[in-house]
Amino acid sequence: MSDPDARPLTDDEWAAAKPGTRVGRPRSPVRQVSTMIRFDADVLTAMKATGPGWQTRINDILRDYLKRRP
Image (cartoon, rainbow, N blue to C red; front, side):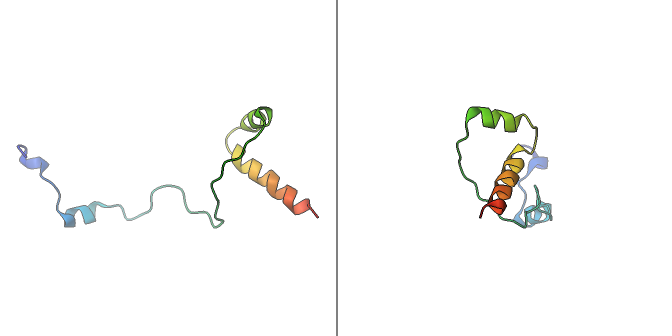
């Protein structure tokens, strides 16, 4: 408190300083669930080698498989 310019903000000042928008990615209309799954090392390496978005591509492959199943 030796620096008068560095005084603590009041509750009203903090409320005014908070951003009015959500920070981060927009919410997806489809809820995703976090899980842990084990892949063979060669499969995971190959999927990661396809570049960013590899997890989405795995999801798309699995969704396509489920659509084609009887």
